[in-house]
Length: 350
Image 1 (spheres, rainbow, N blue to C red):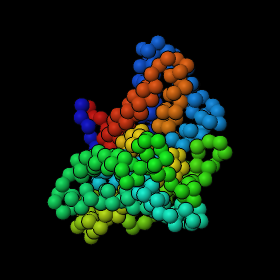
Image 2: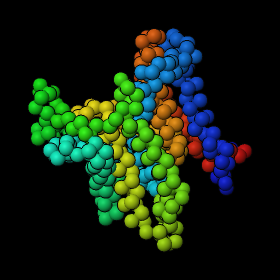
Image 3: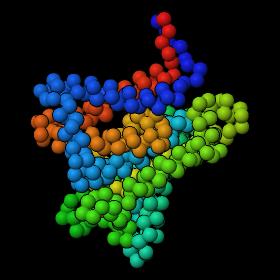
Image 4: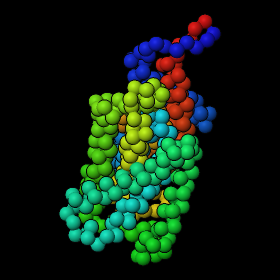
């Protein structure tokens, strides 16, 4: 038995791969639920009920999906061009911190809300870009592996955030709790559903996914980024400016992650803390792989992850099963997706 590379992977097979991967992951996770003494079908039913069975559940699921869409886009854009951005978590935190710092400018509070929101979103995106451009510069100049530098910068970014919210940016009205000063009311994102946490950031994230899809599939930049990812040497021989292309990819990728942090502060928290992100940056890598690096697919993959995380809480209370089954299921989905991607590119020959 051997593996033979497919000349032209089937489009139907490529589209069905994520669905099959998720179904297999749910099947395996269902076995673990059964071992815990619960009915897997009832457990999954409770997860869906917790995520979509009420107005609050729907709003929380969509709120949770919002930063996941953006961090998933950050990973998908970079990976498509073989820029291995593992630093989405740090870029998210830097985007959040930049917005909180920008919000300390007195003039921001006097601005019209649309202008203040646009400026804060831009500042957050630029902060994420800068944090990714540093590892890219080291790669282009000295050949340093960006997997290592982007990963380590996550810890540097979180520690820097901790330093700032304990020092220069600490809220004097927080009773000693380590958090930044809140953003002004003019920079707070409007709610989409009254008396919920669902905010305008969801529409911004979906628009970002559509824009990224258009950019990758309908522009010269998208063609160059794909060429750089498929075969850098051939792309350079064909005249693709690899350095400039990777810099543009890094700006888009880091900007998406920084935008996720800005939106979390402006739409949910209102200020920065060191527990702002429950590993949204790392989850974005899983989401990008589940979507097969497709920007539109990122929306569905982010929604699937949000459903598992939000619905698992109600399932855990009803069945006395640890809510960590959601993390296990999402991780299994990544593993099965990697196998599915391999099988879409290779066939088994005897």
